[in-house]
Length: 212
Image: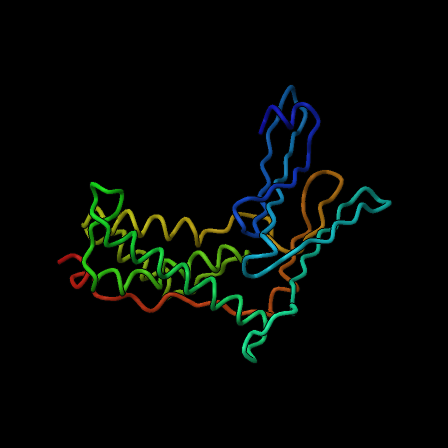
């Protein structure tokens, strides 16, 4: 990324991971400041079904606004499309996480019991859904739960806790709506992200029930 910045690239648009995520990095080379901003955009086929509007302004600023598909030509059973999409993705993630958690370690899984997987799978799904939406904001109970896993003394739980913590960690700038100034700094805003809700991890659960 530093090589790209040295070559004069300041802004790059990426995708593939299906998440709303914007990250900036700054360096200094020969006394000159360098900056590269990576604008990753989620997928139209995955919650929250986003797309971006990018405006190159006359004052050399770049305005980025995120929008979401709110309806499609499909029978969602009377459920508003944003809710339908979130439920569909969340349910699929729970299933994937559950099977990965109970799969034996020698087969690429974590080797947890079904009881443990039933507790952890929804938490993993919630973290991914929040990351897909961008501007992740875990509450105090969520952080308490993650810290309990990390400090549990169980290597598997600690690894899972660190993984969840990384998903919930949102680096600056804002992920959905912002203005990039000519000097590469950003005028950050989380406006426009209140039209959805995502599952928050439950309060910390006793780790002894997970480390049996």
